[in-house]
Image (cartoon, rainbow, N blue to C red; front, side, top):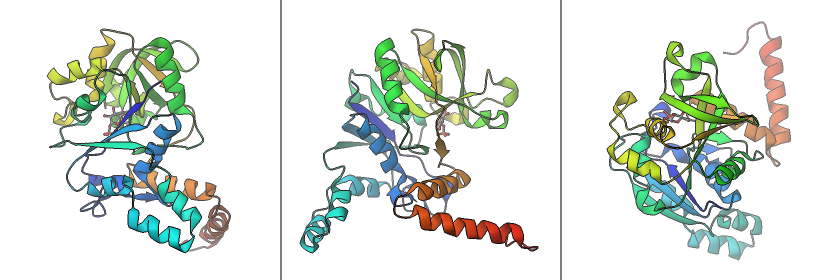
Length: 295
Ligand code: G1P
């Protein structure tokens, strides 16, 4: 059983400027929930209830969001708004801890900041930019593989050749059932240098021996300490696995991906879905039937 999960959230969010000038990217809402809440609920659904958020400057809204909101809860109780009350209280049983990453020195450095919290247990890492369809069981499947094989596991997706430069890419041996034994990992290679199209997506089950490597790891791609480089070293010492995810993932760290996630999640929303579908159908009809599409 893995109890602890780490959520790196110290990035500058430059792809969403100016929205992220004074507010955390992780608090941008997808329909009615901030991005990071999707990842937190995903971990909670796997029984992980000790969560660490790695924060940085301008990120205090995240702490407030996951805190109890006494005045709000009191007002909702008095008004008898039970549904809303239940919604704002839903995550109150989860323990949140926060550690500040003093400078954005890379994902590997962010994970190293988690060492005092994680101590000696295996733990999960969830990057909230990657939103996994709440109906999928990716994290639970990864926990199963990590436990059974007593090894770290990273989530993989088959990415387009033009996109290998956006991901950590693995070279691995297919062991069947979507599981790869990883031989090598490269952070954001050029398409001509990529060992495969198997890209790491933002879910990891890690073991605490990653910290020893991160402590002495030099900066890699982009001058940042890369988790991919640390995993590459780890794979030279012990088996490390990849698990090919075949479900739905949205790259909400990018404007187009964020819009796609918004539309698809809104279509699935119980309260909004039907009306939103009707709106989109009308919009599409206008767009494709008009000789002068609105652009
Ligand atoms: C990070 C990792 C990369 C991984 C990606 C998944 O990159 O460095 O290896 O493939 O997350 O989302 P980032 O997207 O933060 O630049």
